[in-house]
Structure formats: C-alpha cells, structure tokens
Length: 363
Image (cartoon, rainbow, N blue to C red; front, top):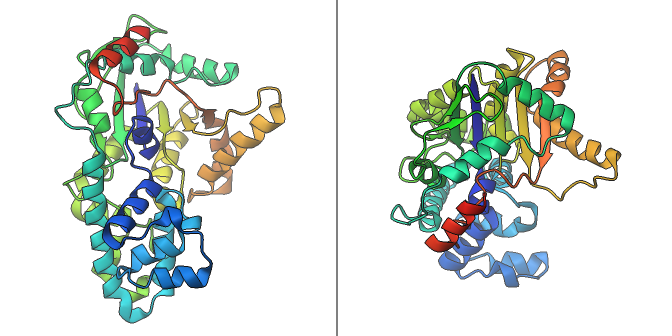
C-alpha cells in the first residue's frame, strides 16, 4: 500500500520561509527598480507613470496588476494573459524577461531557504506526528474510511512529493533519524519513509519550472514551437526534467491515500490534478485529502461547512479532462479538511535548537 504527500508553497510559508508571491514581487521591484509597492496608493495614470522605468514586461505587468495577483498560480495565469496584451514583435522580449524572472526567482528562493548547516535537530517526532495525524481533522465518517485503508495488512510505503523549489522537505527527511514507523491502526506493519523527496517541478539550481499548463492558457502564435514547449510546465518537464515527472507519476501510481497540502488547486497544474484523478478512478476505495488553509468553518453550521468543502471539491473537478460521469464518481473520493496543524508544522526559521527540542518533546 502507498500513501503520498504533496507539498506546495503553503508548506514553506508554514515553515517560516518568505516564499509567498507577494514577498517576492515586493522585494524584486524594490531592489531592481526602486518601486515601493507598499506605498503605492495612486490612481491608474500615476501608476503608469511610476512604472515607466520598469524595462521588464513581466515585472511591469506585476506592478500594474498587483491587486489581481495573490499567489504563484495567479502569476502564472497572468503570464498567459500578458501574451495576449503585447504586440507579436514583443514575443522575444517577453521570453528574455521570462528568463530573467526565473533567474531572479531562483536567487530569491535560495536566499530564503534553510541553510544545509542549520541545526534543526532530529525531525523523527515531527514526521511521526504527521503520519499519525494527517487524517485527524476529517469528519468521523470520513476518518472511518481512512482507517479502513490503514487497517489493511501489509507495510505502507510513504512518498513525499514537493512542488516547491526549496530544500525544506528534503532537510526534514534528511534529519529524520527514524526511517520506519509503526502503523498506529495495525501495529503488525510499518510505515516506511522514502529514501529521498521527489521534486516534481525541479529545484533551485536545477531548472525550476514556472509556466502554464497548455496552449489554451497563452497566445502561442507569437512564439515558435520550441519556445511554446518551454512555456508549458508539462512539456518543459518532458524536455528537461523527465526524471522528475516520471518519479512523481510513479509515486502517485496506485496510492491508496493522496494528501495535498499547501497547494492552490489551480489551472496551471491541471496536468497533475488529472494524474491524481486517474489514480483515484483506478479504485473507488482510494482517497484524495485536500488540506485547505482557510478560516475554520463554523462548526455550528453544517451548511457553511458543506459549502466550503464543495467549493474546493469543484475547484479540483473543474480542472479535470474527463467525462461528467467520472467526475460524479470522484466526488465521493475527495475529502477536504481545514487548518490541519499536524502537517509537519514547525517554523524552522525562528526556532533555535533549544526551542526545537522543547517542541519535539510536546508532540
């Protein structure tokens, strides 16, 4: 049996890293162009005037569209929209600026990520706590379905898949002295950690992947065929990072439980949502748990809880390129929980060794 954990940028933010989109663009616009976006409370004309010295098409669009872009997924969507706004002859300029964006992003994330020499202590208790509690925020009936799977005889192979370019998850696994944990529901069998973290979209220093999902999301006519391939994340993975893509697919394949944490279920990662759907459709007992960061639903209102869950469920389903009948089938396999504080929850940037050890003792 296999259980997969997919971690997105929300996980790095939880770990104390300033890797959210707004922190990046505020830093890069101020450092490169002296544009203080926090002080910018001007009308559109004044904003246009202030951005005239920004020579990068993408950074200028970021400054002009700052109120409409809140996440990395939003940025990728905005990149696609920008290709429809520029003149066809600006296609090569867009690509040059896109390269600069990727380089700047890598440099910024390298500055933000944890240092390999940081003494974060043994993370075994932290990992064990997650393995025993990743399902604890589910409703009783849903929790019963998860327990039913975990009660089955046999060892459980755990896979960690990072959609971040940083080393946070890899360091947690590296510092985890225990590699095997008891399955709390069936103590005759173990939960076995992977040897390494799979980086689905690459890593800092190893061609991180930023872009769109397919040609429907940008104006492909202003680029040649090879350039188009590099702007689409799935195709870019095929061209340059095939091992990342195949390793991720293999980790997801036949997984009985798939956890998605810290990821916005957006259109620019449609490829991966369709891969997950294919796994779920292979066996009706399989479960997808989407851990959504949101204000805790009002426990006194079942209608409110149901509405919030349905929004996330539909957001996932609308990205799928499958028949309506199959989507209806999948609805029963998608579980949503909010503010799960058991998912490797530790602020590594602020903890010193003493505090780290204190926290480990309380888990």
